[in-house]
Image 1 (cartoon, helix red, strand yellow):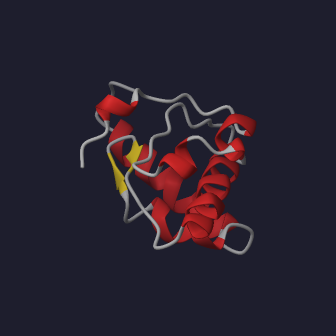
Image 2: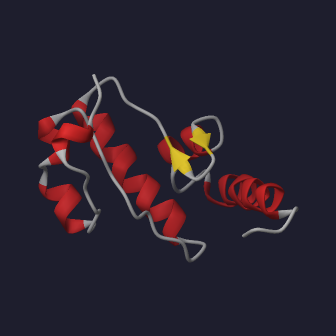
Amino acid sequence: MGTASAPFLAIRTLKQLVMDEASRFPLASKVVLPDVYMDDVVSGAQTLDTARQLQCQLQNIIKTCGMKLHKWNSNSKELFNSSTVQEHSFSTNAESDIKP
């Protein structure tokens, strides 16, 4: 990072990732491009079950190109404290950092 082309390359990598992996990770593919701001994915889901599926798919789609999600946060205590988060080794922010 730091070069003039870095933002373009980062977004282009994500675009290619979605094109390559959309069939394997349909939920993640729908949010990766429209819900990315800088280097954060800011998204949500209507149900807790869908949020859990999205969480798992996001980690796995990113993993396919050798990257790793480093932070995870949620305003749902059920999702934040779920075993899925622990199994996927997401780092977590303090609950007080979550804004309503």
